Length: 196
Image 1 (tube, rainbow, N blue to C red):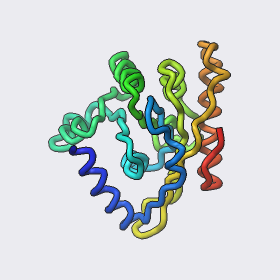
Image 2 (cartoon, rainbow, N blue to C red):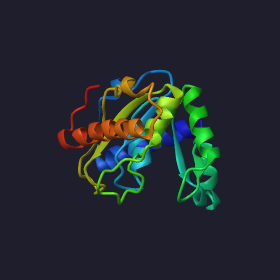
Image 3 (spheres, helix red, strand yellow):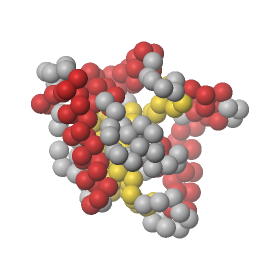
Image 4 (tube, rainbow, N blue to C red):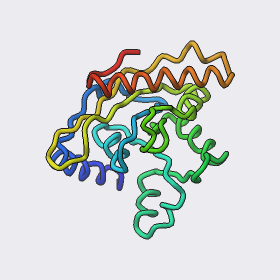
């Protein structure tokens, strides 16, 4: 209930303030676990990634944010879960996998820090997807959060990771991550939904 109300309010705010347009929403599977992977440019990114789609998106959030008055309870109410700075705990990994195995959507920013301009992806997104059998949908936020300047969120077709399913090696995860990141980078440059 809180999530739906907040999503509706933020849709209006982001549409008015940032003229946010969504492209490729039909590429997100209607059911089943989905790892929604996106580039990371601002603290405003989590709402941008989730408000234009109908499915609820769950996010990891820094554990210290849950201690902030008002914000902490809101994060819990909308389905966010804590992750410690400097590494993902076993509990966070278990929570993420359970979310996906329950057929929900998990939003992840594979770059990690929004200051990671090199676009080097962390392997968590690929690992979660392969371990849970979830679809991976790449997304790209295009533009800057400047008032009344147009922004776009683009959702690509699910990335085909079948070639990596039977290979548990770190090298396979690295290559799977590179494939996901390349789709995100492609959409960031073209503004067009990527193909599998």
